[in-house]
Structures are given as structure tokens and as C-alpha cells.
Image (cartoon, rainbow, N blue to C red; front, side, top):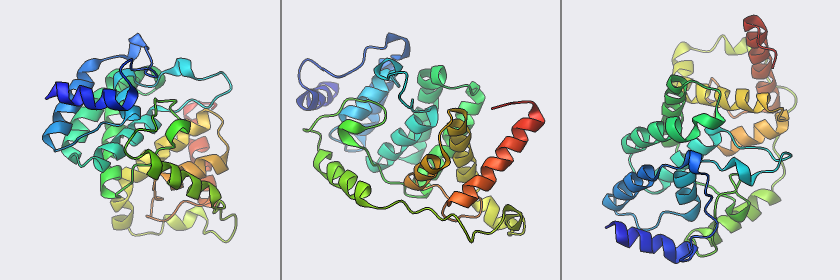
Length: 258
């Protein structure tokens, strides 16, 4: 079984395996072996080169320059979770595998404790599966600098989608949004429905704020990943601003300056 899968991957990336990072500190091949087994048993055929790269190596920070935006742990886990769903693998299997992977392979790029990583990964997986978040990559320009190949079975389709997304104008609402106080009047049942995925969205916002990412870029990230607000609405510029104010107030109260 494994030989078949290995040959399938080699057909995509070439016999020399070029493009795969050799960051030994973040390498744990057991994750790839377990993924292959689950993928094969579900009827899968090809693990895309970018996925295999991330599974084998985690995020290879050495591939980025000092001026580059470094993807966060949340970026990697959400990307992998969306691929698991795209590949037809179960939410239960994704949760079991991805939680352990995130703790072992991504702790070095996160300030969150292992228990916090487990909790946020669980929330991310639930959100990806319940909201039917599609798997979308940017081919050779993927934000992880992960290996990509024109021979990947979804390369042409993803390239077309990338061109279409770039041709669209940004959809940012600056005015006529309800103030944050109105959200407090929403029914608890509505807020509870979106609680888990909203918490995952807040983790993304906090992480991007720590890196100094501009609000418009954070907004684009939330919309692209299908996150909703605490009441299930589409994120807008002003709603995001209200949540950022709350986050800053929380940090001031706890003595955190970022």
C-alpha cells in the first residue's frame, strides 16, 4: 500500500524529491505515514505536493526572508483541515490527526500552550467541516512556500481560481454598520451557534495583530476562510474594528502591550 502511495507522490514531484524542505527540527515522518494509511483506506489516490511538504516538514521558516509575512499556526492548521475535508476524510479522523500534528510540529511557531493549541485546533476543524470551507491554494505562490508542481491534479483548476480572485475588487464596508453594543442584544442561541468558529476567528485576528498586519489584510483573510462574526454575519471592516478594540482592551486589562 505505502509503496503505491510513494510512487504516486514521486510521479508528481520527481524522483529526487526536490522542493521539500529539510528542516529536521520539525520533521516527523510518522504523521505522513498515518495520513497515507487513512487516505488510502478512504479511497484516496494522490496527496498533493504542498500537503506532503507541510506534513513532513511543518512550516519551514528558513524559506522566508525577514521582510516576508510568516504564516501562523492557525494558517497551517486551517489549510490542512480544509484539504482533509476536500479529500473526503472524516472530521473525526482529521481532528485526531491534526490536533497531535499541531502540538508536535507547529508549537515552535506558536506562543500558545499545548492545551491551547489542542483547543483551537479542535475549533478550527469543526468550523472547516461545518461551514463547508473549500480547499483553496495559490499554487506556486502559496503562502507557506510549500512545494508545488504543475503536475498536481488540481493545479490548473487552482490557477484559474487564483486569477478569478485577483480580478475581483475588495468588498469592504466602512460605514453604516451596527455598533458593537447592538451585538449584545442578539439572542444567546445565535451566539452559541457560532461560538466555536468565532473563537477560531478571534485567534486569527489576535495572531495577525501581533504581527502588525493591517486591518484590510486581516479582513481579507477572514472572508477568504469563510469565518463569520459572533452572530453569523459576514465580516466587514467596521465589525472587525470593533472586535480589535475589544481585544486591545482585554490586553490592556491583562497588562499585555501588543
